[in-house]
Image 1: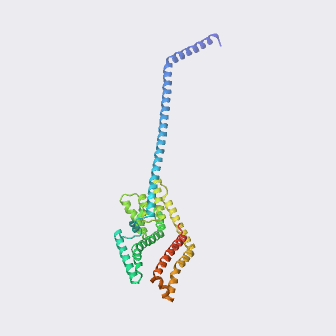
Image 2: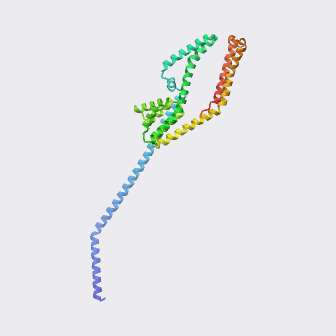
Image 3: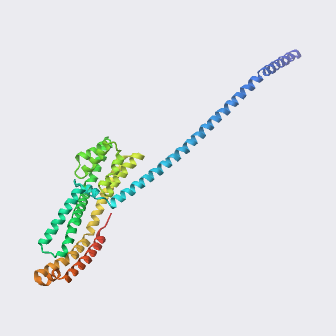
Length: 337
């Protein structure tokens, strides 16, 4: 390469370098401004992102605190309802007992029937020539004890009939839900097709729902009219499903299975304790049987207990101690599941 060509190349290179320097000098401010703008926009975006993140964290924390307070309030309300239910189950009022027994009478008519029963028992005792000193006791037993015992007996029998039909009704509800029907239609189906007393209790739930009460609240009141753990289980399952959601058919299916297992366990315990119950019945009836046999063989010998004041005291003491013994034996053979 000649010296002239080298000089031309150097000149062209210097010219291009000078032109680049001049262009950079003119565009430097614009490039710097653009970089500042981009840096500022990045800072703004980061600030916005941080603000959104902080706001999301604050909202999440506030929502967690709100849910925690809601759970605490629900637990307090549940405890209050549970205490009220336990109090109502342990010492129900007379009106509640009549409803649980399925009797369509009010308290005033109950007292009227109690007075009539007391007078009838006293008149029967008078015709049987019982001592006059025992007539007030017969009046109290016939007016206060007999009607209440009758109500408690009917209440216990009604609960037993309810428990016999209740698992089958739950199975019908489970099948209705699995076939695509809502829970309300399943409850209405039981209220129309099931046997008493299940039909009446579920009809009460449906009627309460028609008045605007939710299914969970109406189901939770089932235990007030049917005081048994099984009815309480049903109300708890419906309430939990209403609040937390989930597979209702599976929950009710598990409940039905638990109820059937409880029924089997009760039957097994009853069979195992039947010998003890028979022994208690024989021991409790033995004094009366012996007294009756003695009366058949020698009436004058046994009648001294009914005609002599000392015999009245002996009879009273014997009945008192027999009552204590029967109460103790009853608690020994009465197994609760």
